[in-house]
Image (tube, rainbow, N blue to C red; front, side):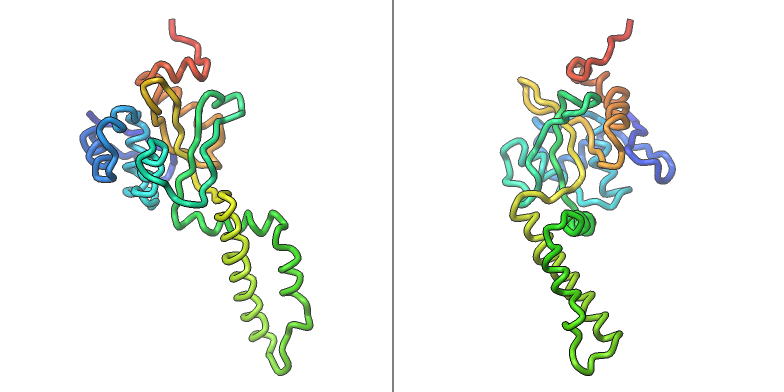
Length: 217
């Protein structure tokens, strides 16, 4: 069985067999009982994290296992939450993490204003040392700001479980969580919904009921 599904427009279409997708999930220690509740779209997204997007597949699988109560998950990530917007209401999201997300978390920490006082202290002109050249001062200042952002802003977000990553989208069901797809924040709820309606609802009809998708005549 072949499929050409994805959540980015980068690069040519990819074809991969269902056996390949299941093998990838098993290689990342997902039990067969969990794989049975993963949509083909989710399995493809997991496969392409390593083959195409450069994300860390084990980190994605780890958060699935955490949602199943089989792993503690990564410390510091935001707690799982449900979607409140109309497009995805009824579905849940859990963050997964990758080293490439550090910069975004640092940016959010800086934008929050939580470090403004410390930043102003670093920027005081009187911090320039006697005999220090402008380039030496600029280099030291950039290092101090980077250290503040990482060791205060990033660490504080981690301590408060506010680290953000990208999303594992899933639906709760009496038979267990059903994992629908991976998604990025920039994709937007409408885009995520369209992928789920097209790629998941035919496989898991109950998801269409959750999303109030009209039944085809």
